[in-house]
Length: 305
View (cartoon, rainbow, N blue to C red):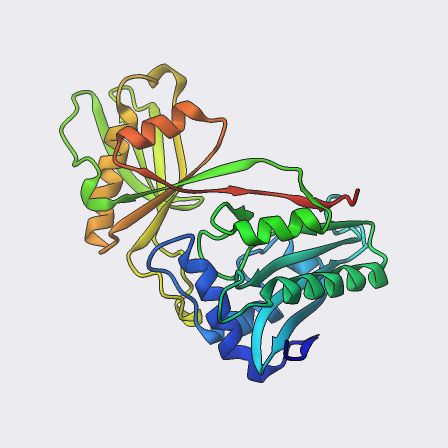
């Protein structure tokens, strides 16, 4: 076995690190990849996390190198101890993401590289003397968060290293916009398009002017200046139906109006997210043209034996 070295990330690692991250992204969501610029920016700051990112007081990226190749990498965060930091994150450390190739003929020692890199991450958290240690898999790409089920090699490493899944599981669904319903007249309802909290909102109003439900879709999953390849991808930011309108098919009408707008925007795929226990909501999306893309387990905490 050639010499294996765990060391801090260097700028000349950027292409190999980006390739490693994109290999993991490709296993989760089709047609998405990130640029070198996106990866380098994420190592310095995470603009997609406007609440938690300002709480971070230290960021360290480590890699495992063998035969001149980056075979594993991890990004580790330390959160502050001040009153401005949310209680859950106060004085916490986190393995924000961890990636490595599963063992193969080209990387026969990748498991060993991952073990040594994880040992270095845990040693760093120990030196920081943080109150609690978290882990996740939120590489800098749309849709990839928590720990996707598509990365069993990383899940196995987390298990061996003493991390336990302590949070919920989310189901991520995807639909081709072409497969979604098309708008049809519905007596007694009018639909209005406005700006919502999480994207463009379509609201259904009845004859009395009361809102019966709304859907919000976001076509800006990728920040253009960061050059993420996610063209044609959108997601449902919010979907709400008034309880009195449950079972009336209003959800399909809202999806139809959103889909018509997405076609005009050249979005060809739509994502949705639901807690695994929300079986009725998942079933509704499945009957509307969605399929399950993956499941992701959120919140991992270090609780060694």
